[in-house]
Image 1 (cartoon, rainbow, N blue to C red):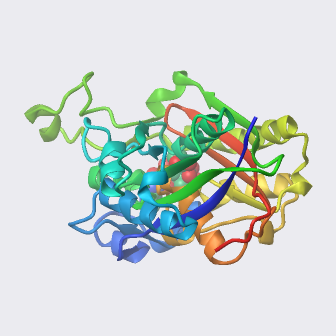
Image 2: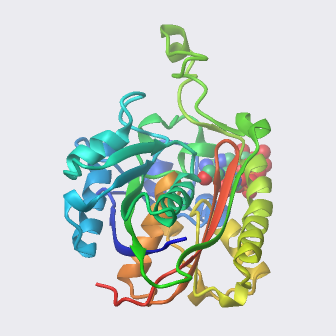
Length: 333
Ligand code: UT7
């Protein structure tokens, strides 16, 4: 099996910063409640010209420049998103076109907040078999356009953004995804759902009048699920990789809630310097959260050649995924 590594990274955060105090002006909430329950201080809201495609193209372009990869070298474009520009076509084709990757196949993965980790594992399979040498993997979300700003329990948690990596084949053995878990439990579908707008319940005048549109979340149920699955998914992936938590150089979890991250880190004896957290500045950016955190970690010099990374995410479906990822030893740009 052919190894892989990450050769480029990038992220895009819309410039509009929305603080907890800003939200307290439109919904019955407070900075104190949001910070204590979630760890979030502010998030970004997309500007008028931003879409999931434009944000994806921006960060993918940065990642390709950093990797020194030309559009013609890209074999596959994977875009994880649950908030694509359109129900169809897939946003992945807009991104493929936007980055000029005319030789590449393109695929959208809609796996809620878990999508980017699913996409990294998918990219690894194509590289491992020799089918692809260069894959652009993006996680991008613009959830704030379908949040219900009358539902304070949900609207204060989410933000917009995008992150991308270039994954490429490596000649070094033992790099890339060393162990992974992809999980799904559809019995929990109702706990995190956009019930209206698909074929089961299309948008009608009545659904709009009744205020049924937007994301609905049973926060307590998702919290219970998340605190359990974050730990078990990490343990299972480590076991498959034949490694231990102490081997991890940087844990990059889904940024939904600082309490969920803290618990997983404490249970695995991971000190703060081994845990990437930016939920305080971006809120929950769904499938964009892991690549946004990963890209910021690279920029901050927190990832060195040869580093062992651990990704864990969970979300709608309900779904979860984890991947233990070894960087190869080439210098980072
Ligand atoms: O990436 C997708 C995955 N999503 C998640 O990971 C979210 C998981 N869940 C959570 O992070 C937490 O459950 C929340 C942050 C959503 C909520 O925290 P909680 O400690 O579970 O609070 P709660 O839902 O139990 O609500 C506590 C109280 C309730 O009032 P009562 O019933 O105790 O009087 C809520 O009505 O807080 C109230 N509340 C609020 N108060 C002020 C709910 N939302 C707000 C709000 N501001 N925005």
